[in-house]
Image (cartoon, rainbow, N blue to C red; front, side, top):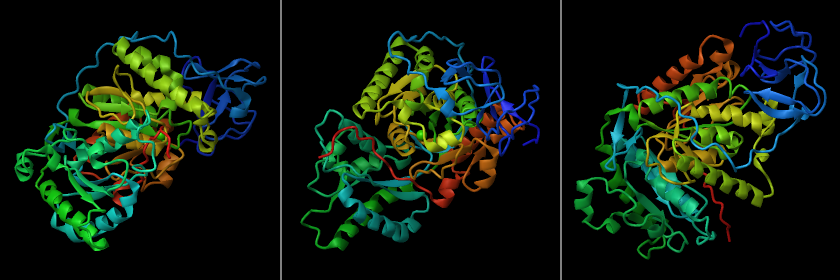
Length: 525
Ligand code: CA
């Protein structure tokens, strides 16, 4: 980072810019334009480039992120206490599929080494997942998983890991509520994530509301291969492998654990026989999200991810962007980028559902921003959303998913999820994500057990301090030592290396795994 004062303006209409220098800039600093700072402005925070009259718009990304509560002189620090946040754009009269960008040229010849599944999907890791119908079995399953790792896994060197899909659902819930399908299909679709090789193994208690047959009805899961079919007969129902702890056959805790180990061994043998093969980059299913955002998120890391999103779409891959409260303020940009009016209408449906969901809780999208966001220079959700939405790049949006649904189409998808890091990640896993990209400015050690998470730092200072947690530094863009395109390409190549297993992410290296957190908009009992 040079010592000369450095500010970044995102759009020619903007009357504020953010300070890029590590440690911010002191009052009296002189910008290259000759403007003298009237206040100390922390790194990532906004400085007024011109006088802004009371009630006048404060423009960043070329749009009003707020209105001045009083006169703001040029050179002043523009913090959130000086801004009145604009209301959210209504959902009526939006532009539907009006932007028709010229088609992006195909990107051919890129491949990775993946595990091809019977249903056509491709895994980037080879993991035994143990599905659970209810939280009651979590302790027993965890005990069994520790023994599987110690006693069985060394015999199956081709299997990367054993993961218990622990969650808080399954009993004490209103399972017939209109919104109950959200958590149920999330759990079902996570069990079918491409990184689990189509091997479905369930641990159930016995008396719970979410019975195994309801979680995974026959026909909803793939039978791994012909060998498997001949093992279990032609009846798909028999292929659902369930250990029920309350079965009378179990006498004592150890007999439950032995049952789980016995079943796990069958699945481990099949998983161990799988081999990586060369597959086109189009088999990547990438979920992008951000967390612990700062004002650089929308300047460095998210634009680089957006550039990479375009590369992936050009390569024929699937990319999901999510985090409804963080894109709600850019709804008109999104509906206009939809490939068809129908896709735009689906997006509006999801936003309307979420507006109503928040209203039920007597809040709106402004509940999103955190103290850390504000300390990092993001005044409000409008400013945060403009920086978040750029992760979606510029490709047309061709598909929309409701929370917990499984992705069936390639291209760019808006997968509606909350912005909460763990809930968004959990829902993107259910959608079939085989690689996760996560940008952060404040810093979070986020990781998931089921997929590699590539973490991208928005600032060089964070990348330096968290050198063994951050996988890529997009701060080089603010430092002026790399372009958005450079970092976007770096990310693309890193994705292919990580997907192939040639590289591990830091979260994998340290085994930093956050819990699955289900989105359950339905009541509990
Ligand atoms: Ca998030």
